[in-house]
Structure formats: C-alpha cells, structure tokens
Amino acid sequence: MTQTTQTQSKGIQLSQAALNHVLKLRQQQGKDLCLRVGVRQGGCSGMSYMMDFEDVSKITEHDEVFDYDGFKLVCDRKSLLYLYGLMLDYSDAMIGGGFQFTNPNASQTCGCGKSFGV
Image (tube, rainbow, N blue to C red; front, side, top):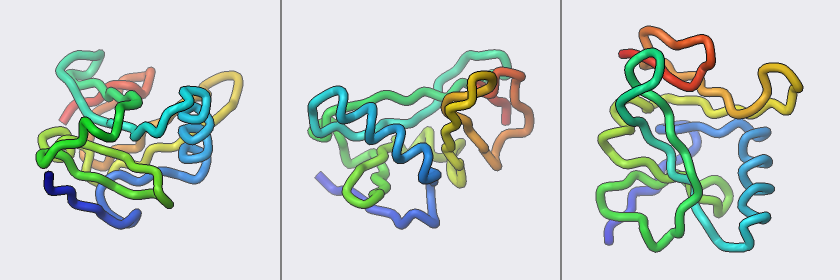
C-alpha cells in the first residue's frame, strides 16, 4: 500500500477549529480513526461534500493522505480533483454553525453550503 503524505499547505486544509472538533468527535468514537472527505453527485448545486470517520486500515493506494500532527485526513484522488485547495473550517455558532467548506474550485454554492457546482 502506497500512501502520499502532503503538508498542510497543500491539498485539503483544516483550520485549527475544525481539527479540534474532529479530534473531539474521534475521541468519542473510542477508536483510532481517520477522516475521509470526498464528493458525490447530488445536492442543490450538482455535487455534495461528504465526510465520515473511517478505520485507517481502509486507506488505499488510490487515496491521498494529509497528516495533521498525527491525525490523518484522507481523500480519494477523483474527489481531490474537485477539492484541491479546500479549507475545512468549523464554527460552534448557534446559527450557521457546523463544518464550513471554502472550495476554490466551486463555481457556485448553494445556500446551505454543503453542495457546489463546478
């Protein structure tokens, strides 16, 4: 299995707030998990973001792996074509809080911020 580890200045970037929240959620799972981020067809604007925890044993040679102080963010190469340069942030605001995606590749985004078009 070949894995490519990128620096934080490339690929998909996590803000410190997003990293802190993901680490907190992972701790609640009680396992050593990575975060898989990707895209799928659908959503208001044509494509929607997806992310979920996954066991690190499921990382394949078709994945790009971004290391954040020992925490792995994983993205398949096809999704990375649409997500390269993405900034994943997190806000705990009561209105408009949650994970926020800032994608330089998106030509349009929907009001919910969870889907985009290219």
